[in-house]
Image (cartoon, rainbow, N blue to C red):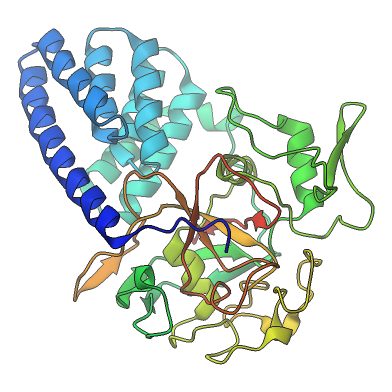
Length: 402
């Protein structure tokens, strides 16, 4: 597959070793910064944090402490930006969401504070962090008593086109000799309950988002590529309105970046699945390699043996997964929330894994219309830069269970 980054073993070893050393140095400096913050030596602490950012610019902890320092210095606008940076590198960073809420609350932005506390509460619940969970609940209750929730109601998500995955354990990855090294080792994972889209997000659905939000974020990050010269792009802009080329309304959206997938998910009241959530929905709990079983059948999904392009979502009902999700093999590769990295080596159960806290590329799962049997396996792990796009990149969304 043309998009997969191929690393030589030596390069991987050097990269991992360098990352571990850099992380240890960063942690030491940040621990020193924490002690300085405790005694209000804020400028000294800030110098240490800035040193970490210079050496390790993707470390979310450094931006968290920068936010705390600026908050204590009453520079709330800068504090907000620092917390947002921390979250951009580690979306499930509960304390960053909570502190962002405190900062919004301090500046009178009650609706924004409420949303941040809600996100912090949800993360603390999943992470079994009882004390911080209760602190977030108190903040939410205070704002609700002030009537904030009357003006900020959460998006009501229609789950009629989603399938429910019960909480429980399954084996993730594969030790099969036919699989790639980064799919190993097979390991046990526990997941909280969640809902996942039955189908991949379609061109028609994504057009509604584009007409509501545009095609790029405030920081200039492109969400989707429009105007492909080869005619492969199925969404066009006509007189300022995004439209789908006739006949492709129900095909999965393509040429979408990770940023475009992630922003759509939030806009719709959902989120991108973690790699573990995606894989559990695709293969169930019996360890099968494909949604339908362990043997490859090219007539059960859209792949490079039977198609030259995408097909309408749900075109191969015989390839349905044990959970009831369609097209979990083939049609389009699907963005996940995780950064790409090797699996941890452990004999225990990993609870609700969310991947490395930082990285260079994001996970892609499921294989596309131009891929073979190996890429269409449920344990396959593609990866691509989050700002890149292609004619076989799409996604689906999830939401937390009740």
